[in-house]
Image 1 (cartoon, rainbow, N blue to C red):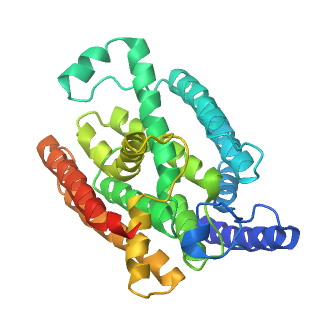
Image 2 (cartoon, rainbow, N blue to C red; image 1 turned 180 degrees about the vertical axis):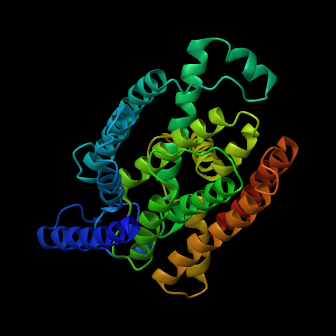
Length: 335
């Protein structure tokens, strides 16, 4: 019954926000926005993050805690960015660094074991563990913002992670999320469908929020189930992480600032490939996101066969890096 009420709330709230944003021309996709070239619709509201945030508030109103305070602050960084009140990426990253350091410290979620000897040796130093864990969260947060450049990609990717976690929970793994999986899945499915038809975008608020929540929750998952391979957690988050790291190296190689956006991400090259085949803007957009997530679904499904097997997870991670690099090099001519 609660799930039905929640679904009605989601749909009603989404429709209300879309109406308000269009009527008052606020939080709208505008010239220079990362979606502009790939969707061609300048009248789509950036409200996915607002829906996720208030969904969490709706469900956990009587259980607000320290984690929710950090969720709120991360959400506000993205929201001010969407409102064009916080345009400097350097300032956004600086605020994110400060918040993630405090979050890791206060929630006591610093990593201590990675099964990589050198890193594990360094993690014995608490300051290094604090900085390293915060760095991992920052990479995922901003990587999620990078992959949120076309419809369904970022939202669909985190849906895949939700389904993977649901499978693990059904098989007895100890999983206790701040926001229950069934409700997160319902929320993301709602946003996914609306996003697929250009009714809304995640925006920076949504991308930062999903990256932050899932990176924290998956670190907690590992800390609660220390026998699970840490490389399984890395595999679940490999795509936003590698997209971010690869993007930084690529921009440095071309003498560009790593914090400023460009249109040379893998999903954008795949979009250009489909567009070159004379497909419509919207079809090219959706096909690019769906094709990447179909590959990710296959990889995650394979990893779920034995999440305790470090060797299997490492092989899959290496395969992902090879596949990503291969297709990037082949598609770079379509940029």
